[in-house]
Image (cartoon, rainbow, N blue to C red; front, side, top):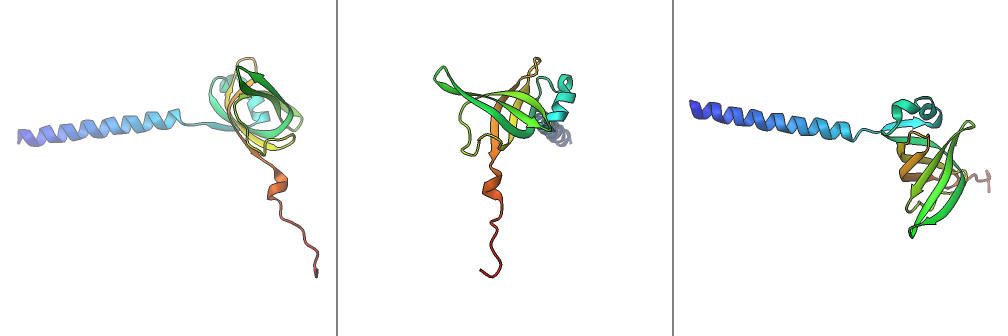
Length: 134
């Protein structure tokens, strides 16, 4: 009888440990997805949290720093913008006026430090128009 309770208690500890690990890893992997306007409006609440910001890339500037590419640009939405800094490789579709989603943190001075860039060139994904009867 004592052996049965011992196994039951051991099983309970294992289930509790797994539940704890799942909840802590899930909450740490959450990322907020916001627009430029939402990020600017909630700057203090989003500061130092990992977030994703969607918008259009403008004024792209490429520099070299410590042998790595450094990109500075603006993510723009409805005439509002956030300055972004990114070190690393960028996708081929990352060009002026391309739609982007940047992942990173918003620093206290309002600059966005990106760790990842996703870019989409709208012209690549538009359907080709053909003439009727041709």
